[in-house]
Image (cartoon, rainbow, N blue to C red):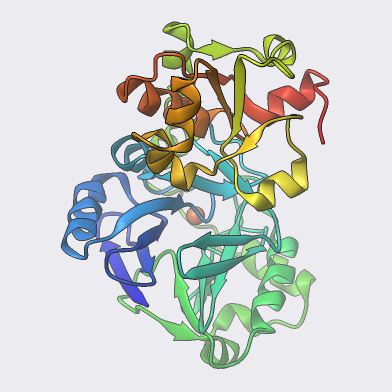
Length: 342
Ligand SMILES: [Fe+2]
């Protein structure tokens, strides 16, 4: 496995790059906006293709690199299903698998620091976000925090094998990695007996507000939508309009989501499955979508929320597939409009 731990000294944030091989797909956890150039250079240096960018939670201390990475690499942006962030093109739930070529991370929903906090387990290591820090835990005094919920989340992490490596989202002392066993023994926040004692401990901390909070949290909520631009160009159907496209011979509805998302949320009847990860191949000369467009069909992409499909429309239009459209708001809007699913 290719593994890199990268540090942003301004916010003391760790970001992580994972890939299974040179020349293959890569994923990044908790990227920082100011470091995006560095990540992209590293991808080139290691001959990697960034396909997913993940935030463990809504950060209050730095601006996320998710939006910029999406714009520059067309990667899929991922957060938990509880997240209200607009940039997110794929939402995961507890127990879901976050996959790239050759690697699979298990998503653990670990609320407490925020109500959208996730940890990601990958073989011998766990990426703990701001849930479990080295000899500390994430603060629970703002952002829909809940110290009792965090206590339960921490107990869940502590049940992982002792030798599991702990990679947090931050460290302010220069520590880079720990293990579950070490944290069990030496983490002062874990020395209390139960959730009530933990809540009392967390209440007693009276931490100063993070410097960036008033800037970062709102900025991270709204990373700019591709969908508005795509609609402005007349390349979007509303979900209501899309209902009238089902079953038409001149329309090819293309589902860009991953298999797990289709299984959980259902799909528009008669749509073809062509995951976003294979988009470039599919819209190139000789590709499935290219051939469908050449045969005279209007290509109508859809995904979970309209983000991936908006990017797909732009990529397809760039390739000269002028009939490319998408369903605004994706499967979420379709379901809300009462669209049929199967
Ligand atoms: Fe945080």
